[in-house]
Image 1 (spheres, rainbow, N blue to C red):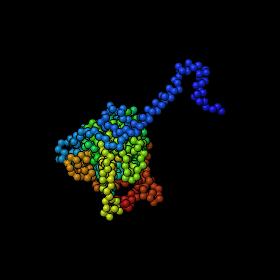
Image 2: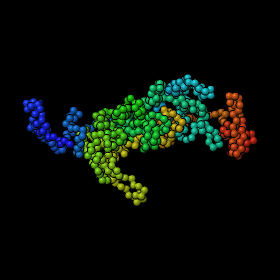
Image 3: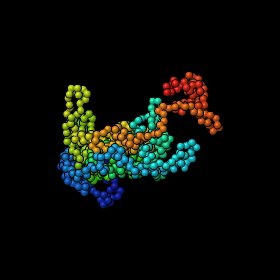
Length: 560
């Protein structure tokens, strides 16, 4: 095995082959190489010493001076931040808001323009469905175009189903001795189901992009909210899940949400729960905010009308990063939130520091971004371009054991964490309000669920606007009741139907060959006998033979 040759031996062989003159002209001398190497080492050592001992950077540097301070440099001294002008005052663009009733606020969002749009979308979709081949008994063959008045009744029944929950839609029109609903006085069951089946939110062809089925409704909602109200300084960005377990490419799983499987909506709201803007997650099909930097694009898309005005946005660690915080600062928008430890540009001295309970460490960069780690029960990594690293005392709510002793606990928390906890609950509060009165049913298609979710969001927004405009304390239940009573007023019926069902026998239908479709007698079957009958009770929807018809109803207490 040959040993490794030294540089002197290699130089000697080259001189023997090519001569001394060629070697001196083509290659620098060993001394020159050594001198250049020593100079490079000295320069590296000098730059390293400068980096370690460099003073606190000048915070007055602008974006043009970025070459003087790299992105990886952080300091423990608080830097001077640029102060933006205060955003415009929150305002409600409604005439005489303090004198309006709940139904008036409802009709501010569900106005005549929206109802005409919705009627046009539904009628257009119904004409497309009618052009397809159907069975003779299909409901679509009886379709008649809907209008704004009928849609208000439809919405009243739909929201009523969120107040009174039944397992099946058909049960709202069922009349029994236990429950009798009067929805048939406003709209028949078949008509309601037909409008629900034709519910659509676009007039465009969705064959190439199925997600266009709800885009016009989302765009209308965003535009309407920007015209009705201007938000407060603090804004919240979070995601909301619409329950859906069917097959869909954009279905998501988020373990911390109430509905873990479903369609994700990005939401911009205020801390009180009023939703201002929505954007539906569409994966790689989203040409506007999809692809690399998706999260940053979503944030800028939601904040688009409110940039350059000095707003403060609060987000969780799904959205925040040092790069996004710096980008928002360039657009005169503050950012505060929790932060993932593996984000790019994070200061390693902060993320890798081991802390004891109550300890904290922080760093600022030249643009005014503060990254801070604080140890409570676990490490809390946060970021802010508005609030400093300073601590503040808070009174922690005592647990049940301490409440009995009458003691309260005073602890210290970073001010950015305290304000994050105070303002970040806006979207969760809105989802909480929606969860009390849900109108969706399991058999709905995905775009119908998204559309009804947005309709419910508009209803809850009307509730928040009513409380803000009138300064009246009213519960969501009472607000819904007043609106539904206004949409479904009592009707004077000259010949009202009997309160209790008549339970008159009725013959069963015949098949195509003319034979009666006989059914098993329910009473005989319960007695382990098999007897077919050609009649049934339409109110009980069971087959009964002539001998069991009266005993069956007497045994179940269904006769006067």
